[in-house]
Length: 217
Ligand code: AMP
Image 1 (cartoon, rainbow, N blue to C red):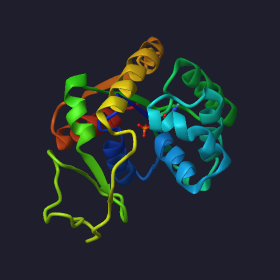
Image 2 (cartoon, rainbow, N blue to C red):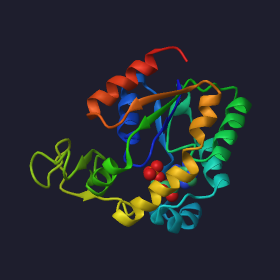
Image 3 (cartoon, rainbow, N blue to C red):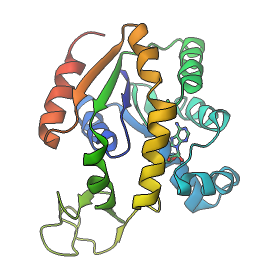
Image 4 (cartoon, rainbow, N blue to C red):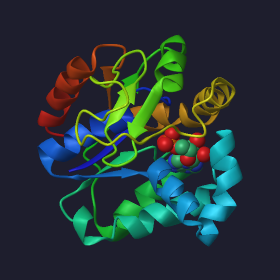
């Protein structure tokens, strides 16, 4: 299965992608996470992308298209993959269509997680994750059970993203509306766009998503 999850920052793409990964045995491919790893490892690409990623602006289409094209060749993508955070511009959507065609692959589902901006700022400013196992938390909506201790692995080290500050969140939401939303009509015109309501409880969003994914593309 090849699936694209589209939605503004904080809509829950990453959380839902992890669940789909576990349920359907397909790999979550988050371009943001790939970039953050490249930045922390100090690779050449990471160094070039750092200022853009940390300010909430998009990295150039060519860079990200190259990353995705290489990554989906990896053996763990053979069963399929979930694109989380890609494509983010119409040019990327077009490049993805060419890439899949060249590789003889077919896109099965494109799902929008729709949600209003005003719900997102709280979600994003409050989020943090375990530095050890990556479990996600939120100050307001999903605190750890014991303060300062990861529920899942017991670690006491947590990390917050450098771009989850209010100012950068506003930039990222602006970028989403201007550059990413136009990919919704792109997929709608091709008859492949589906939508779930991202303002609901996480488990409800998962239920809606599983329903969509269980129907044939
Ligand atoms: P995310 O983790 O999806 O919120 O992405 C974090 C940041 O990585 C974004 O604000 C961009 O700077 C960069 N990024 C991630 N995916 C893309 C993409 N498909 N195109 C351009 N930049 C991206």
